[in-house]
Amino acid sequence: MRHDEFLARVRERGEYASQDEAAQVTTAVLEVLAHRITPGEAKDLAAQLPARLKEALVTDGDRPTESYGVGEFCRRVAERTGAHTRTAQWDASAVLSTLADAISPGELNQIISQLPSGYAVLFGKPDLSD
Image 1: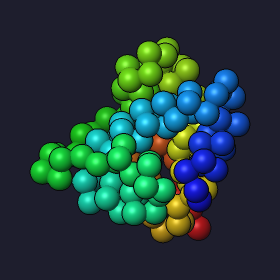
Image 2 (image 1 turned 60 degrees about the vertical axis):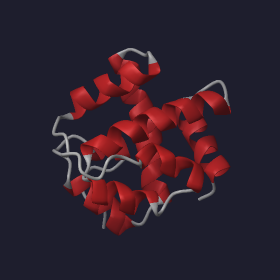
Image 3 (image 1 turned 45 degrees about the vertical axis):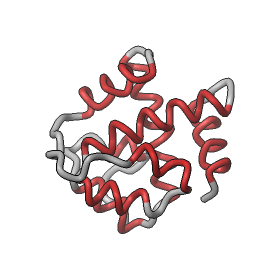
Image 4 (image 1 turned 90 degrees about the vertical axis):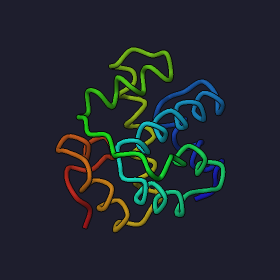
């Protein structure tokens, strides 16, 4: 999926006023996700995305993977976007469900398997992909 197509889908799903707003939300969500999954998984995910989205997934490869649930994930997204936590959950869902459409089912399963229950729904999935 091309960068502009990815952002157009995020904009539509999140009902954002502009492509720039969709891009800001996308960057925030991907940055938080990059710290929640292993550095190797973030790198694998980045390999399947357009170049301009990869930057948000680049992290220090020596850092430990952080462990927290959906509530903390949304709080961290809200912190980056300046939104309320409830709005950040909407934002995360808009980006992560688009992400789920843009990557292979195997990669999606690898990401979701690193996350506790509750995250799959943000990706628009009830559970692991087939």
